[in-house]
Length: 113
Image 1 (cartoon, rainbow, N blue to C red):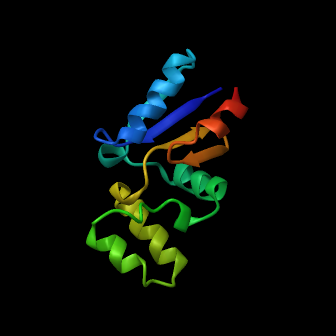
Image 2 (image 1 turned 135 degrees about the vertical axis):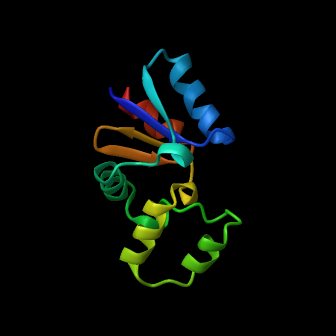
């Protein structure tokens, strides 16, 4: 398994995801979303794995960009906005090759083992 956890330093779900893999002694790479974001290929792979941009956005965020995106119909414009502002992504995003989850999903991660 090649686990990558894209998270935010102050996110409880990110910390829970890291603890989940530590407890099972599964090696993972932790990446700070706000600081480093994702590469273009990683972003496209995650979009494909989770089922589109609407599953990747943190709709509970108070950021004005999120409020604006609720009224946007253009999928490409949403993707560009989220790619440019990775802090709008719901954390954590956990990748295992071409598979990915958004949020805390231990029931799916258990199937990866």
